[in-house]
Image (cartoon, rainbow, N blue to C red; front, side, top):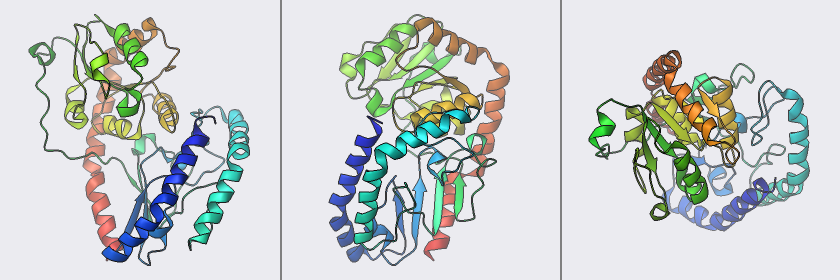
Length: 335
């Protein structure tokens, strides 16, 4: 909770700061629909007098909590329900006053009360981005206002990077390693992963991040400070990731197994869910050993049954066309 509560506090400060500007924008633009893709309510968007849509681009444990699924932000396993109550109680104890104050403020801005211990209202339409194969729908069915988008892969005009010839000749497995824009700023962690995989019989593409000049790659690696992830994922055989929702859903969209090193927020939940569903391995982010990381990569790359299964899942996700489905639903509610 020493990380989670300060994040909520900063988000709340941001929402209060934005409120006057958002009201001015709504008055000026006069939208037909308002959309929030965030973890907390912006009252101006909810009270605009037009349909309001909520988008959840985090792990769907955020969606309508219930006792049949783990609590959000705990990284807890589905088969360890005995651990859930203690986490829920700790979260409630450390966040109750914060929630009560925010609930009072949003009502002072003209909204209805927030659901108990939740920081955002549901909308007339609610979209969440998560593959069916990882979802909690069996344990927690949702009503018709909730619609799942199995993926929402960003379209880009960027081309795939020019990789070294040795990376594209098929002689070695191709691995993509990224800890996201925040995680990659942990240079010590980046170096630990790089050192652990230096010289292994794999070619590794590394997204070095904002401090890339401080990161030296091994001879079996190629990278840049920033890479177009969605152009790289189709090319690779394995993804090593922090477990952010974008990367997890994009890896599933393209049918790739994952090694997950979660850092904060719902990354722990995503890592746990991918691992318990059998689509990858969750490792201790700061406790893994070099042999453990190498072994996980070798075993996932050698698991032909898993890789074939994931290819089929990726094809199914792409056919379900999350972007097109979202556009149709938004046009429908706006009209």
